[in-house]
Length: 206
Image (cartoon, rainbow, N blue to C red):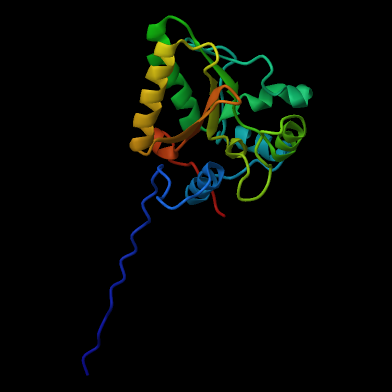
């Protein structure tokens, strides 16, 4: 009797930055992307420190060649302020490249937020009604360390036109997902691991 052997080829789902055509909120889509890329959320300061020690989160200098970080960054946990000046490798790479490309305008960009922990997000939500939740399907992706906020409040119309064009292009290439937060005056950019070739160990076991 002839035996039939079935070969099952497992093809990983393609992860795209653009949301599906059906209606879906921006925050929910960001969390779907975070889950697909297995990006862990920082549940507390202990976990944040552990990820920094392992090199899964890298420092973003207070001032770079073409950017600077907001002086208030991390102020809701003042004793541990410097820990919140970290990001995933590919998010840090985005800051460096985006700011270097923007340098043609003759001034640095301002980074207003990087990684956060659940307790930090809860504190932020108590004083900022527009802040995303710290838990659930609509939680902030700053918890993953992959999201960066870049202020556009001091940008000229030409700068903003350039930034909009650059970010749209990167999103079409499935390198980032971004939204323009008019209430917060910033570009909220979730950088995907595909942005950087050096981001091989981006996730972990679920």
